[in-house]
Image (spheres, rainbow, N blue to C red):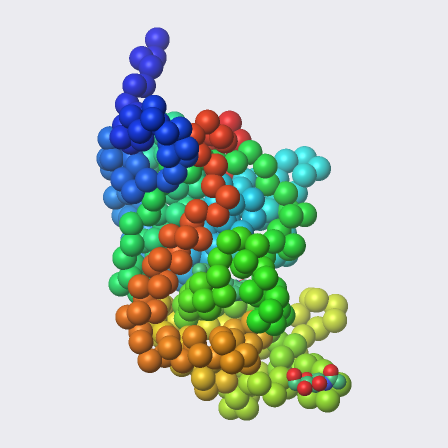
Length: 329
Ligand code: HEM
Ligand SMILES: *[C@@H]1O[C@H](CO)[C@@H](O)[C@H](O)[C@H]1NC(C)=O
């Protein structure tokens, strides 16, 4: 017979909850310290190993956390497999290019081997994104934890919750506001587009068929547009053409830094939703601030990642701790 596991995560929260129940619902830094002390280091070593094999792994993990949090909150719903007749989030076109799920599964397997049924997949995603930020940007922050995993994942919900690369500033602001994030946080977090890559299909209309007046988006630097054309084929209406990927930052594609903002200043934003930040007075001012004060941007980025990681989280008795991140218990 199995002995019931009595180790409790964050005993402090239990004491406080006797006085004020609401505080037990908050995420806590060091949540797994007493119940699974090796959790964070197991995740870090898994991320480091994945990064050694693929320098694009941190970018994938950061985007995975963002896409998890914006759809049904940070509840690891993005990791769930489809079930018959019910395509899961990962199948949505809005999650095109999303990767890193295998890295989360590997970390989860290592953790389950030492502390079964203890560490949620949603927390692993948040920790792994933090480790990705540190690997690529030398930007460190503590991750408040205690998230539980959701039991629902619907492809049909994704597109309406995520921002589109064709949004203007107003639409981006509204999309982030719906998640409790400010305009400045939107600009700050967009700096994640200084690492990783994009499929040509996310921006090639800007190169070949912008509108009836301009074939090339006039907000694109002409030399940069010419360079992108060498990377991306003319979009095919049949959708059968190849769809290569292009680095957001061709110079330092694996360095999370403020070059993203310098590129916007030079009209070298890859996505339309990047370059539009140069369009309005307010966002242009914020972009310029991030160009001039890189360490302040880094501090804001860390803070905004923590804030993003709190969107609509499940805590306490809500949700569950999945045994396998791909399926509900
Ligand atoms: C502001 C609105 C945003 C829009 C419209 C947007 C859109 C996109 C698109 C279209 C791609 C390329 C997908 C592909 O074609 O493969 C992408 C990649 C990426 N996004 Fe965003 N994004 C936004 C905000 C964010 C935020 C807030 C983060 C994280 C904090 C983020 C992190 C990333 C990363 C790291 C990649 C590269 C992924 C990789 O190389 O695997 N994005 N984004
Ligand atoms: C084409 O795009 C330019 C620049 O964004 C814009 O000023 C113009 O109004 C657009 N033209 C049409 C016909 O949509």
